[in-house]
Structure formats: C-alpha cells, structure tokens
Image 1 (cartoon, helix red, strand yellow):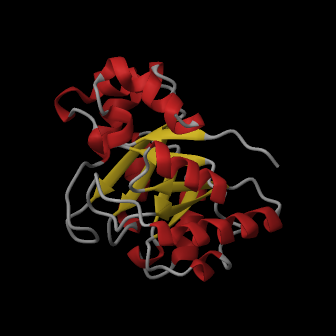
Image 2 (cartoon, one colour):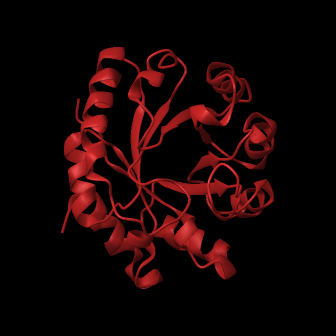
Length: 221
C-alpha cells in the first residue's frame, strides 16, 4: 500500500522565544504534524517543556500535535498532555512498569497511542501491543538532544517493523526521528517509514525556507 509521506517538524529546533510564530510558520509551510519533544532530565539527559507550553501552542494551529514523552515515570503526566492538546502521545516501553496499561490509558483518554524504540530497544516489544498502537516511532539517534547523526544500523529495524505493520492489517504510522535530513529521509522512506520527524532540517534558514525544507524532506532534492 502506497502511503503519503508526512513531515513532523520538531519544535525542539525552533526559536523558543517565538514558539507560537514558529508553529504558525511551519503549519503554513506544509507541516503535517507538529512534533513536540518532552524531556525530563532523568529519562534522557535534557529538559525541554511541559504541558503548559503544549496548551499555550494549541490555539496556534489545527495540525496534529505529535507529543513524544521522553519522561519517566510517564503515566503520571499523560492526562495532563492530552488535556493540553496532544493528539498523539508516544511513550517508551522503558518509561513505566506496564507498557500495555500505559497505552490503554492513552487510548482511554481519547488520544492516539504511540510507542518509541530507542536504538538499543529490540523490536519484539511491539509484538504484544501492536493491537493498541496507532504509531511506532523508531529513534535513529539516542534521545536527548537535537542535531545528532543518523544511526544507519536502525534501517533494518524500520524494514522489520514495516513488515509487522503490514501483516497486522492495522492503520499504524511508522515514524522515524533522529538525524533526518534530505539524504537520510529518503533512506528511511525506502525502508518503510511514512512519518519523518525533522528539527534542524526543517528550521534551518528561517521561515522563508521552511516550505522548501519540508518539500525536500518529503520528495528528495
């Protein structure tokens, strides 16, 4: 099945002093999702934003808020982010004791549920929860910071997950995040990804460049 390639600019690379304007700019430039990286300085070595920022940004766009929670313990904060405006909530299996229950909680709150696999996380964790997830996120860097280099050894993982998704018959998006640029985007798409998270590659050059940056990520140079 041929699927549209969706671009999810990560606001981690945006101008934090003008986040509302930045979100409006990437919306106008053709972004499909707004990717929000939430880090706690504990599960990953960085601290970013909380649900208050998500709530403040929600009026600036009607695009899907794709919220990636890199926090632990994660269950305590899921309702706050859904209430703030998250449409998709993606969690890591290592961020709580019961990943199945965590995904059930996200769904019960009315959001779509995602599961994220770090480079060292085996794909088998997906098999027991594939009936619950709407999105699988493959990290092609170790999470915590933007601007890292794409880990090409994750491409076979993307291919294997595409096979699992297709076999499931479910409408599950396969997202890739980390070191995504014009070149690596095409490698990820060829491996089976259909959602690309891109921070630096989207926001480089300022608002006048966003539309072209997004186009190049989607279709190549």
